[in-house]
Amino acid sequence: MDEPTILLTNDDGIESVGLRAVYDGLSEVGDVTAVAPAEDQSAVGRAISHEVEVRDHEMGYVVDGTPADCVVAGLEALVPETDLVVAGCNRGANLGAYVLGRSGTVSAAVEATFFDVPAIAVSMYIPVREDAAFSDIEANGESYGEAVRATSYLADHALGAGVFEQCDYLNVNAPVAEWGPAPLEVTRPSRLYEMDAVREDDAVTLHDRIWEHMADGDIPDPEGTDRRAVVDGKVSVSPLTAPHTTEHHEALDALAETYESEERP
Image (cartoon, rainbow, N blue to C red; front, side):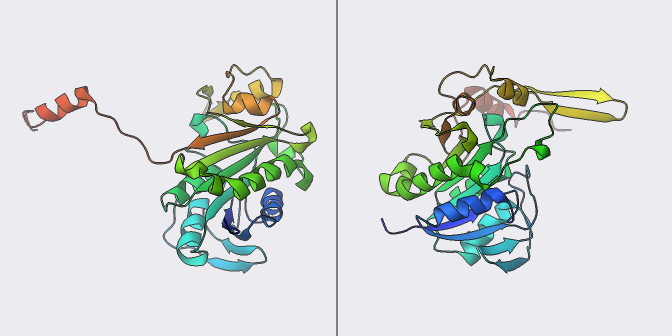
């Protein structure tokens, strides 16, 4: 196919190193316009605004809003001829089924699918332990090398290969480039969930214990899952669908039938 028109967004903000790295890489395979938040919007999910301010930027547009705002504004008003939405590269992995609804990066890709525009969410895993603050971990432009390479390859080939005829979006997670060349593995999101909460006086601390497992390399995730692939030094690509599914449930049907016979208060 002809060179695709790509809308690039993220949740780390338009000045993030990861967005610039992907912008430069994608510019080799398509016509790229960034429509990205002015500030960090991490973990906002698909939060949406009524009105957002938009300003010109050297890479495209900067939006005072969320990643979902950026996608809606981009597809409907700023870059209406978009062939592909790319969200990222996020500084930090977005792995596991439980993360998909939280991540602003992944949520931007999901938002695109409701416009029937295929999308790629891309994130980079940064090894981190409980005793090392995530914000203290260095990640320069070169660290995103494997994430950029995989994203550029998929943006160049996935549309023409018919990948999006069988899925709505791709969730891509890559290791830091310092680990060396990373093969690409098609995966499924891990189901392992280890959130806990501890109360101390008037505060409750929420803790995702998966990160320690990942840093130690002792995750219990089986082969074929996204976390296992990334910890093993591979680029994880999960083909996913966005709309919620529904199934026939006989038990719920029975409740619906008896609803009208219930005594009203």
